[in-house]
Length: 244
Image (tube, rainbow, N blue to C red; front, side, top):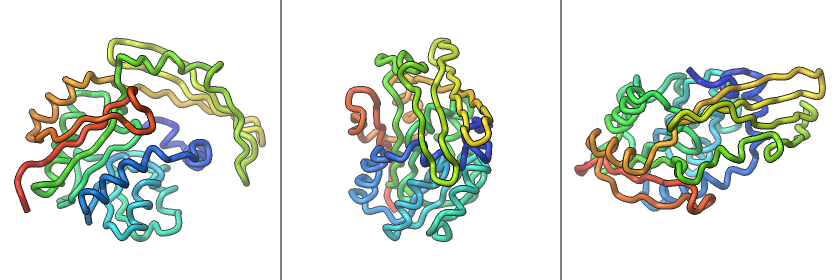
């Protein structure tokens, strides 16, 4: 089940203007260029920012996401007809053969249930051609990112054309082992509506992720820092062995 921030139409509509800096996607674009990919599966595509960046470069893209409101936002964007959009998840994909599968931003951590996480890795593996890559990021638990998830640090007001001012902040709800739950608050000045969205992320240790990948048939090619958050996140580059 997708979080409210992604499935509520009003929140999905303001998701991009509330987070306009997507320089975090630049390393993924460079990897796509480095690998010379022609077909990409974007798992958790959300409002389609990354999928559309790839499509604008002439790459064939399949974007899949369980939040219909987010997919609807993606489908309404210029160039959206160049992407194949799927409302669903990577555990029940149609037959595909791609060069690269990605999970950008918080997608990997948002898959909290171990069985669904393992099935997602398998779904991506099955969609990759032999020699294709899976790339995703996840925060380093030792950096305890959640300690800054509070109103004092996160409060801001964003003016959005056609919408007006939107107040936002984050509230930490619970830390239970590897699971961290937080609540995002949204106040729309135009009519005073207040919406909230609760989310839970799983903070996996590097060794756990590596073991999960190997158990699903991947060869781990590289683990590196996220360039936009050095020392705070791991970027995993895994290979489906073989050639073709």
